[in-house]
Length: 362
Image (cartoon, rainbow, N blue to C red; front, side, top):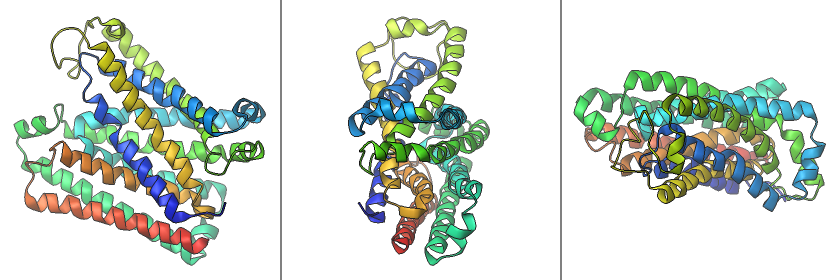
């Protein structure tokens, strides 16, 4: 099947919507500490969903995985573990900065590292990006993406300066700009390692294709390995918090020795059915960002690495929309709201430019 960059952009938009939406169900969880709902959702994100969908959509998954050289498995899991640190702190960024500003800072750094490092590492950066019109268009799209991210971040900073402490905490219950920015920078750098993990797993695509898997789905087995690394990192940290806070009993309807701000919402014991359902929905939505990512990447041709820029831009677009839906920008001045919409407009234009650049290459 020939590459279809326009279809690829659509898939990346769906992935961005899934990523921007994953934390929304978590907001409805009651009487569970952060580490409980994060690990519960993560089991769906990093273990259940990857293996389930890969087994359904690919041929001979176990046979393919058995053929993967140990070195490739090691690199995929290693980069997944580093990405796990980014995912771990990504959730904290949403708590401290809110959806709009948090995503802008994290994904800005993630965009640069995740897009440019793979072709630099592979030694074909100049050949792919500097030696052709299509490469120039993709670089232009990356620059426009970064401009859009900067505009959204500036709007978030302007909103922060203008609001009172009471207004900030009303929009984001645990708002803390300095702590949030520090966590966001670390998260952005670490989160870009997912792109490195996908790049390391390129040979797995060939094995899956040889087993009879269609081109849209050959990236799914790699997700199983990269996300296994992410699960390891997150599980270790959550286990530490569970022991420290004595929160394991919350899985069975009990209360923790130390309740965090999220768990303190509501009275009585945790509503287990509701909490497990919402954690499962949020975790599965988190996985679907990469489910659609691999589909989109399969349609981008020789500039598949540009998928990372499209993915990041799409997440910020939909994350900003969720920020408005949750009234995080309600008290911002009209000028500030206009600024953030301008940033979103730039990101939409960037996805069009990158899609066009990929079309030129095909």
